[in-house]
Image (cartoon, rainbow, N blue to C red; front, side):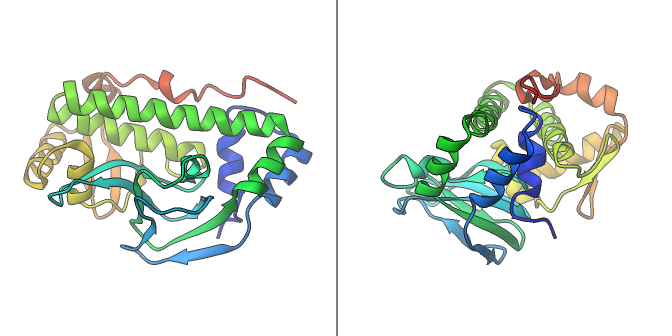
Length: 244
C-alpha cells in the first residue's frame, strides 16, 4: 500500500523537481487516514468544513446531481490526486466525491496546508501546477461533450486516463487497469450506457482498443491517438520545468 503522499509526490515531481526537504514538508501535511467503501460519499455537495483529502489508494469520481436526479460525472480521481481543494476556500463544497472502489484518503486541514505553503513556496507552486492541469482536463471534457463524436470522446477520455496513471507508475503504453463501469463512463461522457457499449464494441472491432474485465488495452495506440486527435500538451507531462 502506498504511503499517504507517495503517489502525489510522483505526480508533483513531474512539474517541479522537489527537494528532500520539500518532500518531507509534503509528507507532514496530511493528518489522519480514512478508509471509505465503494459507493460512499467522501464529500457531498453543500458540505461545510475546511478540509481536503489526498487520494492514497483506489478510484474516486467527482459529480453533481441535478434537481431531477440526473448525475453528471465531472471527472475521475486516481491515487495522487487532491479531493476538494476548493472547499478550503469556499464556504461549502460545490460538488460531491464518491468512492468508485474501496479507497484510502489522507485528510488535509486548511491550516496544515497553509503552513506547508508558507514554509515551502515551491511545493505550493507544484500543487498549483497540478490543480491547473486538473482544470485543463475539465476544459477538454467540455470539448469532448460539446464537439467530439461519441467514438472520439470515448477514445480521448480513455487515452487521458492512461496518461494520468502513467504519471504515478500505473499501466504503460499497452494499457492499464480500470474499474469503471459503463454507467459511470456514460455519466462522464454524456452518453447512454447502451451507446457506450456500442462505442466500445466499435473500438474493439476496429482493433484500436479493448475494454474488458477491468482492463483497458491499447490495440493500436498510434491509430487511436489519431482518431481522438489526442494531444498531450494540456496534461503538461514533459518533465519538471523547475529543478533543484
